[in-house]
Length: 517
Image (cartoon, rainbow, N blue to C red; front, side):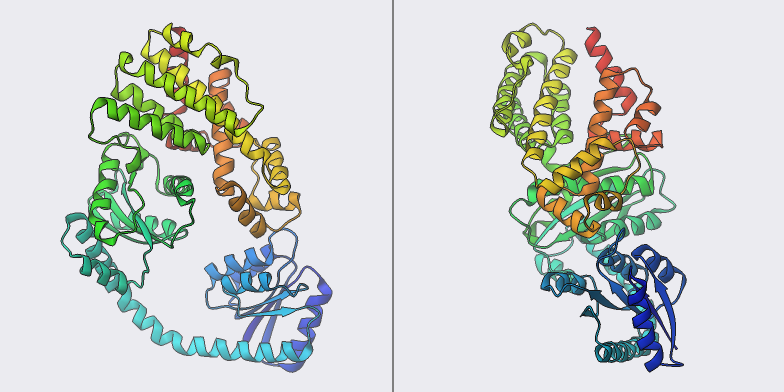
């Protein structure tokens, strides 16, 4: 007996399919139906569905989004996609996410019959090999983690040659164009490090192929492989890594620490990249945080270090990376005396002003008109840092808004919705429905147009608004958290610290102390 699900937002389409299937496969099938993608996912989560007919264009969760969810719930399900549009793009997207066949509406009776028959044969074939695969999988489940851990150990302690590294990767069937290393410390996980390692592997593997292994009682190293990146990958790398770190922090807990190496395409440097990640991890804040190896100062002289910071800050500012800019600005306070940095801060602020002007002709900020004399009149390092960070924040915000103005009209419409509903708990599906497109299409378009994921963009806007409210209002942290869409104050505090390197309460106290000087 085969369980078949038909999903379409038009009842007449479901009735037509069920009539054809019931008449030609009487006694062989159990039929289920759903009028939306979310209903289909719910049914698959409860029932053992073998074959699914899925419409692409439906309100709410689209067919493509539903297929992605269903494939994670039941990878063996045979999915036939239905669409009124005979377009290669739709067919290609459907096949890319695991659909078996693509049928255009109105459906042809003979095509439906033959498709169901072929799908049944495929179900039988998969079920026939399932028992053998299960036994093989049990063996692999034992051997795979051992070899994975051996690979990680070899990377950390340089116990393998280049050919050995390649042999490991061949075993895992990993084609590595580029890669990076992440080293993650989980406080208090000595007894559950293998469970934590499994969670880390699962979360990272949703975005990248990876290998993970524990190398200390509370530390996990992860080798992360990527396909050959686009020319702007360096712009995307930091936000993608921060998104993963946020997910890990939510899943595993507070005070998570992580260091991430530079991106590399030379497998012979794998041990070096691993050491870079460990060094970055060792330099993170003791109570939690994320640090990239390319944010560490090198071992050059003091003047060269300051110049290096200048270049990094201006590069992150041009990308509109508010979190990266603020983090690097903090390094001035940690590494250099007041008399060493005034001239360089002036140089950076002039560069920031020029970048803002280049981003938009409407740039105007009175705080930059007398910046040289303003800097000369500052005698406190804390006041200087506060002045410096505020000016950088203003420039970064303008550059971000200028980028927004050049966006696709649909994306601009989405920006307006996000701004208006920032205090509400909305989802990608909600925004896609407002924009009149599928969530799959919006997610893809948003990434192409903005260079960052929808979730990252919303999180950054909320945290930036929260940062300004901490400076400009007397609202409690709980009230501010609610104003920017977070009902859980502890969660807000955790992701705020992940982004800015300081808790909301400490940030507010530091800002007030600077203003009172």
